[in-house]
Image (cartoon, rainbow, N blue to C red; front, side, top):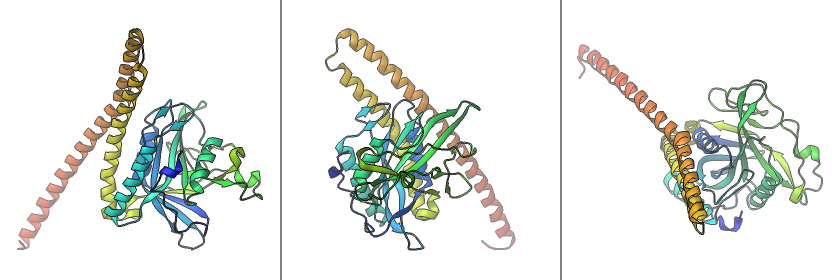
Length: 339
């Protein structure tokens, strides 16, 4: 990735002072990332994380806090990699500046995420190199991997795993060993009530027993794997009530933006394939395009409409209950002679 184009990736004020010890990500941001990761089963997806760094309460380390996300369209769709264009990176930095003005809280591009469909969340050597290049500019930079569409053949249960990591440059840390760079346990989010606390790699879907992740002593490009604890925190606790309400609205905007982005990706691919194609090839491309659009409608947009309809019905019911409660309270006030 062309890191020089990410003008919003301002260096952290904690750079080179303390090491990163943990990551906080808001619930709504987590849901946006997960929805994006589940949008396609065959190819990887990618996005950027917005937030900032802060010192931990103990003062012994630095925490990366993530409270917004930028969904990125893919310039090329591959089963084992994902690429984005420089314009999307620049737009992410502009969104970070806009959030800073809206909230009064410094917001910058602080990390990235991508999906690993049908494979474990362990970062590849390419992931480590990409993370290392960004991290060289900002030591608070964090990478997240969403492992999706994995199933246990023994019980046919699907597993969704979240993995947070950083890279360590072996040239700058010549004493690092394979044991330092990959422990036998992997930090991932678990799902209790309230905040999600980091622990061993855990199935986020059904809370089944932890699964072991293979060690990743990658030495390619001179970077090693460093696992990082991650905590998923309710928006109100992380951002405050007002900002959390705005983030709830942004969650729906992210989901709708994702649907448009998927349709645009299919249209662009269709136009590229038809650029110099024969008539027969164009007919074939049209069939494939229609099939892909139907799949987006069936797997993404239709479930979204169903969810929105259920949410609307729930909100209408809640409004009726609140209206009834208001009327009862009004009668009680009138009985007390209070108007």
